[in-house]
Length: 65
Image (cartoon, rainbow, N blue to C red):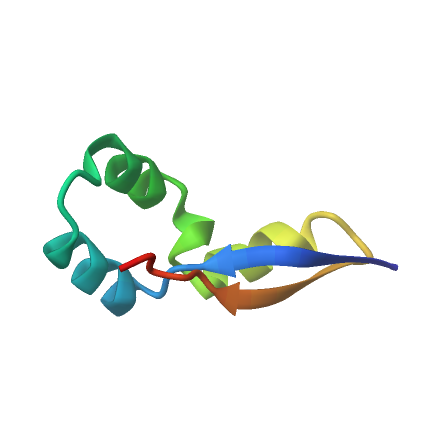
């Protein structure tokens, strides 16, 4: 089994608040929205399922604000 200890997620509500209060996110916000597994846990789990015996310990990303 492979366990990835350095994974983060931005729950949609958290991301929306962050984007609404952070100046200069620009292309970073666009990229984060385009990588659905960063925001959507169901998508993240589907992607992990495609890699066999691979797991992640997922933490909310720090806002930096």
